[in-house]
Each structure stands twice: as structure tokens, then as C-alpha cells.
Image (cartoon, rainbow, N blue to C red):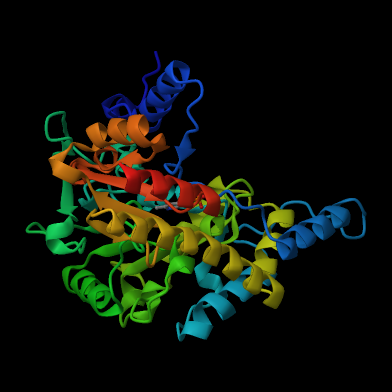
Length: 404
Ligand SMILES: *Cc1c(COP(=O)(O)O)cnc(C)c1O
């Protein structure tokens, strides 16, 4: 008689986005004329820019000709893409990353969920609170997180690092020493980030304590301030303690196209074993490569035309972020984020709960956002708005919020 992986049974239901959808549908039914503006989504809305579309069309045509047809891609990704990444994302920023340290994948969600499997089950993970749910849930599935407490919404074997206005959303070194530290910077959901000096302290902490940092840099393209690192490898010593995850989803609009990569430096060794070799083995056994057509689109992201076009697109979203941020400030809200990330994180007024504010905003302004408590207990009393909508809707939504 077979048995299931019981760890899956431990996962608390993730009702956040289905609850939002249900509430919006109910409101919409009762108020059929309401013009609802959605600023809750964490997905891009602008079409993929021409340089990448052109590269994909060309690659599709190559597939139609026996002379240029491609079958399985190399496990770790095509050299043309990995070379462009090594050159433009790393060498250009003074980071010495070799192409043999770059693993092309179908996105940062799978990599951030899969990376935990090369570590022993008795490692303790540390996460920021609030947090992108994949880091914790993938460790729950692997049986690494202990017992869930419904009341505190915390796992007994997870170290939580609260990020709130009180500490400027900068995680503090935990009392207990973690083995694996997840950092997402710039951060989803808070839209805040660390300076390079603050990040350096985490790199030093990890090296000193024999911990590894899983560094999710999915929002790297949104960084606008000079004192913020675009890669953790800009910090000294990161090549012995950090794995970096990158995605083409938010910088180039590839959420539906699917492309990302992970960097595992060869200097990371655990008792003489190379994590780079382990990840290569995992990749080779469980992943058959990102599509050729998509990797050509990824290559085009690094072309001069591609760079100019994605910069414009990121600029479009960041202009929305500014509209939302300044609009909320003008309306008297306490607002965070929005400068190095497409997320605006606000303190709910008059100590409303995140869900009370969700209802209030939906009913009074017909604007949909995301309750902060959905990302972890320390998100209670906060609310997330995203800059991924249209400019027109961002402006209209803020006019309504200001009029409340
Ligand atoms: C959107 C997002 C990603 C990107 O995931 P993909 O699978 O590459 O689309 C990764 N991490 C965080 C925190 C995100 O918000």
C-alpha cells in the first residue's frame, strides 16, 4: 500500500488570492456598475518589447528548417545566453562569475522552490516576515519546518525575521543561528531593500556562521538608488556563501514566457563537496533545459535594443509606483517601498487590520490591493499595492483614494 508525502498535509491552505477573488466577485455582483481598478496583481501587464519578440520569431523560423532545427537544449543553458549573462549582469558590475556557475532555468519560482533539496533535512531556515510564500512552503513539503501553529501562523522549526516599519524593513540577525537564510531584495511584498553595506553585513554573518544565503534578486531591474547592490556578488565574500536567483519575468515581462537562472559559485563548498556540482547534477537529472526559442529571447534582453526597451518598460512601471507612492503620501498615509521595487507597502490607517482595509478600499474606492497579513503575521496592519497596472488606472485609483 502506497503512502503519500505527509508533509503536504501540513500545509495550511493559501487562501489569499482566492479570498481576494471571491470578495471582488461578490462585490462586483452586488455593484454591477462599479468600475473596479485592480492594483493587487504581482504580474506584469505591458506586452513584451520588440527586440525580444523579433528574436523569438527568428528562433521559431529556425525550428522549421532541418539545418537550423534544435532539439534538447544543453542542461545548463545555451552558451550564447550564459555568456551574455556573465558579461552583462556580472562582469559589467565587477563580479567575477564564470559561465560554468550559471544555470539557466524556467524561472525563479521553480529554482527558489527546488534549491532546498540539495541541503540536509535538519537544516534550519530563516525567512523574513512578511515573505514570498514559496521559500517556506517548499521547505514544508520537504519536512524541514516542524509543526505549524495556527494561532501564531508560524512553524516551530523556522526562524522568522520580522520586517516592519520599526526596523525599517531591515531584517535583524536572529537570536538562533540559521543554516539557510532566504533574502529577497528588492523585496516582494514590502517594496523595500537593503543598502550594499547592509547586505555586506549579511554576507559576513553567513560566512562567519557557516550559513548559506539564498538570494532572490527577481526585482534587480527596479533598483534606482546607487547605494543598492544589483547582485549579492558585489559584496565581498559572497562567492563562498550565496546562491543568487534571477528571473526575466519582472524585468522583461517574461512571466508567461518563462526564463530565469541561478548562480551557484564553485567556491561554495560544504565539507569539501561543491554545491555547484550538486546543482548541476540535480539540473541534469530533473530538468531538460529551457526552450531554445525562449533562450534566444533572453539573449535579446542583453542586446542594446533589448536593454533600451526593457529600461523603458521598467521606467513605465516605476512611474506608476511614483504616482501611487506620492498620492498615498499626499493623502496622509505612511508609505514604504516604490523606489527600488514595483511594490508600494502602506500602513493601514487607524490600526485597521489588513483585511478590514481591503474591504474598505474595495467598497469606498473600488480599488483592489493585497492584504499584508497574507504574506505573514508581521504583514498584519499593512497593505500592498502594485505598480504593474496601467498609468491611467494608477492615476485614477489614487484620485479615488485621495477623495476618501
Ligand atoms: C515574481 C517573483 C519571482 C519570479 O518568478 P518566475 O518564476 O521567474 O516568474 C521570484 N521571486 C519573487 C519574490 C517574485 O515576486
